[in-house]
Length: 152
Image 1 (cartoon, rainbow, N blue to C red):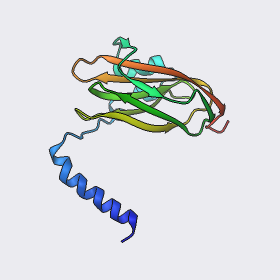
Image 2 (cartoon, rainbow, N blue to C red; image 1 turned 90 degrees about the vertical axis):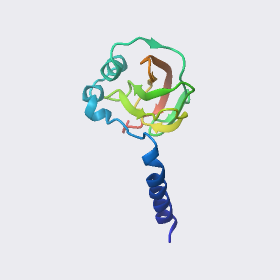
Image 3 (cartoon, rainbow, N blue to C red; image 1 turned 180 degrees about the horizontal axis):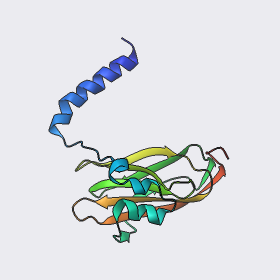
Image 4 (tube, helix red, strand yellow; image 1 turned 60 degrees about the horizontal axis):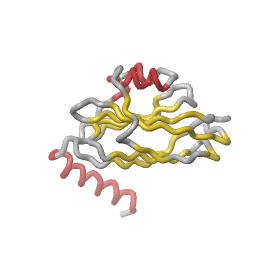
């Protein structure tokens, strides 16, 4: 059996055993909040996704390079010790500001490593919604892009 088949069977078996006992229901934000995926500015995207609640500049952190030599693959690390129900990443460099949204199971440890594309220098904003209170926490950072990752 080759490695990919083995890993696929192992993952399917693990999911079949663990999933019934856990709440792993992800929210389809494209279906429930379609307007959030259409806006161009971060402020409008946050309002479309989370409403008009106030943003608190603590409780979530993310790491990203100050200078991205290649905008086609910018590493981002998102961390929080709060019990968040969702985390969203916004950036104003591309035609649509909302880049990704994660539904987070209750009690999960939030430490995500992702890569994004940016066509030019812009601010990247990470927003998390605290479970229960609905409070919004955020962190923001400007990333300078040398070579655009969207064909530029």
